[in-house]
Image (cartoon, rainbow, N blue to C red; front, top):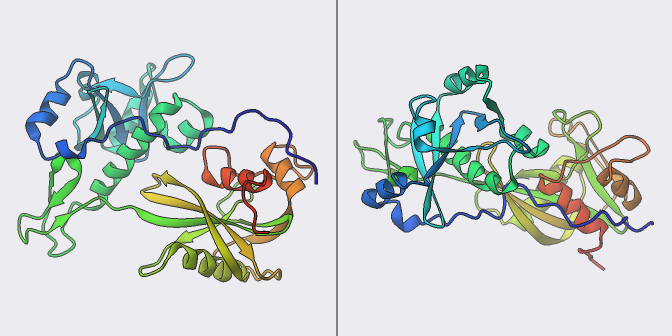
Length: 316
């Protein structure tokens, strides 16, 4: 096996290393929140469903608006306090997707989805974590306007971090769905799969939601067995990534294969097969002889594979 060529520093994992101080202790203090919103350098990220509003600029677009400028776009559906940066308040400002679509006609704005923004590097990387935070919480509000206990309309409180039912008094909080995403390894080979929704050349790590009452290790083993028929032994945690599509936490792992014969669950995967390290190097560097690729650096799957290729993770 050839060594991975020197390709410089590792890229930043998308939506991580949030610079904001979330200041959860301020969420129930409306006076403090108002003071943050009225500060001269307060700013907000404008989210319309799946669309993010940015101001066209060079070399990178600007997704952070003054609150006065943001209010000129459309009425807010919800406002969420994201935290502060050096005491400067930061907010997630929800508008309808229809209002965001209408803003596409403006020459001074770029309105597009978060995946495109992250993959194409359309804004400075420091903005991705708070945009992800805003998008996830605002999406939760869109999906939880009514009480799951009694069906009554709920009310937003605590600066957007809770909804309360005025009828039965049940409190509802934003949720995060835990997902294991894992690279199964056998010596100098690893298991990758293809979802039907992937680009034609792309292969990636297997992944699946953690079920109630299940550890992440057990979820890794179960999902791998169900999707590819491979039995796993030891599981090693790698790192995690918030994934705001709509509100998941990707828990990256490497796992030791105990079997080799693949049995693909065609309801989950289009295909799955073993790849050598040399093949993975070519896919990471986008020079695979067959034109195969893997997810871009914004996705944790890219980092999980690279860590194995560079022998940061070993089961020997």
